[in-house]
Image (cartoon, rainbow, N blue to C red; front, top):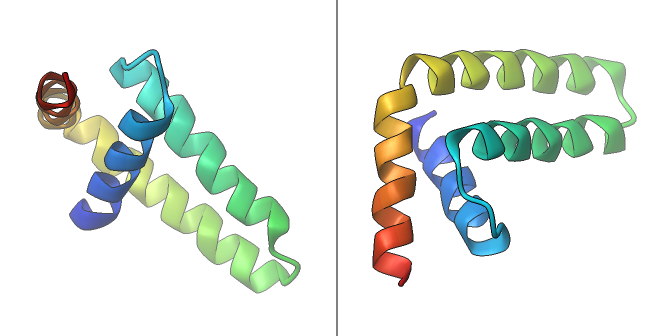
Length: 78
């Protein structure tokens, strides 16, 4: 799960201009939401919904760590 979150952080930093933790949460939620909406099978949609919920819980419980990762990547990007 940590690697998946790191992948989303990297993609977020590459594509977004405003880089706050709240913006990352929105980015993650809506990126995952697109996957869910594109899926035709209900069983797979439910799997993605459970994954999204689980990953969001992980992100929120590791807010400080993820915020530091975002800041570190922003600094190295400059």
